[in-house]
Length: 539
Image 1 (cartoon, rainbow, N blue to C red):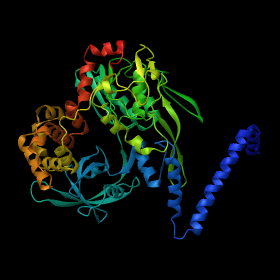
Image 2 (cartoon, one colour):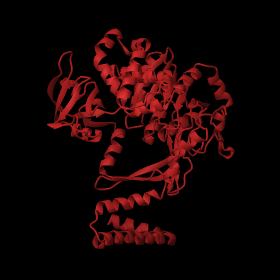
Image 3 (cartoon, rainbow, N blue to C red):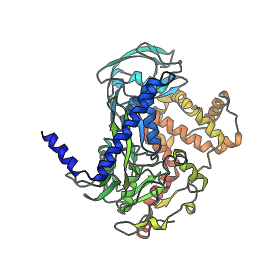
Image 4 (cartoon, one colour):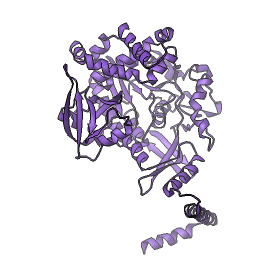
């Protein structure tokens, strides 16, 4: 009865235009159903009805914006898993080395560590199915290793321990495995902390809060927040994380669309003070920082809470609403735009239906010099606004423009380097090197700080990498090898450190070579930090 009255009430509120719109929807829906039925019943050849429907959905979405998309059940699971914060599996990180699964690390306290799997082990079979040397795809291997929590999986491991390799059978009980958003958190100097966030997921704000608390105990009074290459994730995760940097009840972002009323998202009090509402703050970002990364950097910039260093961000400011189907597939439909607290539209311009031009935008930025030269950045005066506290001039127009520009450095990038990396030779070399020197390195360097300071990639190591390249048919170029030697050395050291210690070690090495980090560290320790905040971004 209540439902009937609600329907009658809703019908009474319909305007003439509303009725016409509803009638048009019914007509078009019938038309679509009739077309599908006609094809499936009368077409000359057999058709896959499921694929027919999927293709129709994809076709409809392709004519809209670049971010509305359809995903089948398997794609939906893969999309949601990294953002959900965990999955059920055996708890290892691995590389494929010459068609063999090589264990880089076991997750601390996870199922594999509990049964005795070690870094350096090769998993050669899963449940009596050989996975080594048969050309199996990574996705297929992951399907075999993952499964329901509490279920068992049998693996056969090849282990090299000094003498001849031995084969060991293990039974591993799958469990929930956390997927971390904070890849690294460490003290760069006695007062500067560094936090690397790679995605905005369900547990991101909690991870960042823990990292902030730990770093403050170590004396942190200023922070570098690394969002380089962070493609985004959940809006709420960004808002919750901003609650640790901004005052409570500050506007973090708002969304609005033709069929979506404005929704304001404020930082919320959590029963305690924000962990880092004061102290110098620098956000690292580049052209691949998108979505929730732009919400975060935009709010910090708008509220004059800190400075953005790097290059203009991607410009992904469209809000997708997930619309699930009973079979597990899903549409992610764009329903609104993101706007920073000052009203800047984060979304870069696009033409409906023209996916190719949109995808080539980063290449266009490279070709027109924007990634290399600050004076090639185009600011639109009509999109200029002022920050909320210090009234600095900042600009909209697609993405977040940095307060301090850092050009893309390609001086060490060569065709030879590209070919070596593309063949996976660096990872292959590192796996072999770590296999042979793990105990020696851990004995010589008691922790990763000692490793970062004391370990050096030798000319002999680079020569051996060149030999690997020659065996793979890569033409050796002495001049290009010399040009790229610092880049090769950095990557070898970073990956060796990661495999022996942990993921943070990689960034401790990599950041010493990264121009955006180097500029961020210089700025946060310089009087220029205050002058940029008071006078505005340099153009």
